[in-house]
Length: 194
Image (tube, rainbow, N blue to C red; front, side):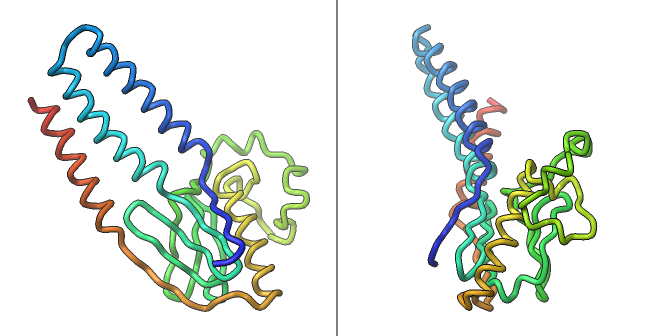
């Protein structure tokens, strides 16, 4: 892949950092109090919670290149060549529509219904969305799904004009992430029951 750009909302790392800070304060609190067993259990629970947070919040991303768009979800990676991408949709989440189906990206969710109050028509200038007949709040440049839409439309047109776009579609599953998620959930449930 050439000229690769990774899109992942910054908020995902913020959520992960907040979770880690809370866990660290709990672990330090137990360690200072001299409660060894609780410290060990907190370390195990924190590691399991960090794994779950990473898999579901931090890992999802969009990788845009000159040839294709890669949608990385918690347990699946979809690579779609720009020739296969028919259209993009932003309802509920950013989606790439192909002849084989529609593929959603966890990394670019749409905002809530009240976000329309913050949108002004000047927000859309220079985004390439002026040609669309209807622009929904989920396509606004301030929303994660809107940013993904703008980047994808720009990259697709550049790739088609340069002749670097590919026409393939591949799906692969991340079995390791699934196994680690199941194990982390089992650990948390076991520690919750005891």
